[in-house]
Image (spheres, one colour):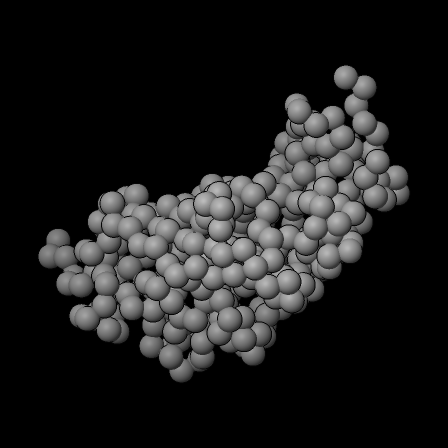
Amino acid sequence: MTEGAVRELAYEDLVPGWRRTFPSRTISREEIVRFAREWDPQPFHLGEEAARRTHFGGLVASGWHTACLAMRMVVDGLFASSTSMGSPGLDELRWVRPVRPDDPLTLTIEVLEARPSRSKPDRGSVKFGYVMVNGAGETVFTQVAWVMFARRMPAKD
Amino acid sequence: MTEGAVRELAYEDLVPGWRRTFPSRTISREEIVRFAREWDPQPFHLGEEAARRTHFGGLVASGWHTACLAMRMVVDGLFASSTSMGSPGLDELRWVRPVRPDDPLTLTIEVLEARPSRSKPDRGSVKFGYVMVNGAGETVFTQVAWVMFARRMPAKD
């Protein structure tokens, strides 16, 4: 029995069409620079002045920063109260538009598909579509992620 | 003219078959926990004791931590001395095996395809395959990434 499987959202709950929108968050100028110094030190992420001279015309968040923020939103708003067992991977991650400082970012995820594991009857994989929009309602980030969840009750087969 | 385009690696240099392997790095136990607290606070990333009770059997790095480390390796070893203009996205990101504390991680990237931009003659897109292996030579992480690079000389068409 997987820990906490009884009271949490489990594989069985995450059926195609299930959707959730998470509270908006922003990324500040300081956070953009701090993240970029650690993981993605390119001129358009490191400071306003250098960024102004690039094709972005100003400071933009690292795409990895946006992706990590999406992860944090989903952990806080779903995984932390679920039987999540981690992810084997992603497809079609797209940085559609630049993310600018202090723009409110809103993420919605939707279950696209769910498959019980063939080899392990205690779990199943759920395919989510992610769409993050900015304050103007423009899409800035999308991805498709597979996540494993424990089943509430082991299958009988 | 894009800044620094003359002396740096440009679109024209990144032809199919071009490969580079970056110096190995490790992720410490403390770094795993610190990253997870900020971006991916799930039990298998937050501490050895809680992680031992999960299906991972011990502390593993967040997949986003591994992906960010790969980004940092490529910025330091390629993008910083290139005409990189950022990435529109990824395909087929796979967390193949868990990344454990202090395991030496070695990333190799290879150009799979290159396409001049149809609408903007000053740039082109390069498709890279990424493979990261651990100290035992096992693949832990792969992805396919498109990255835009400025051309050394604007095309004449």
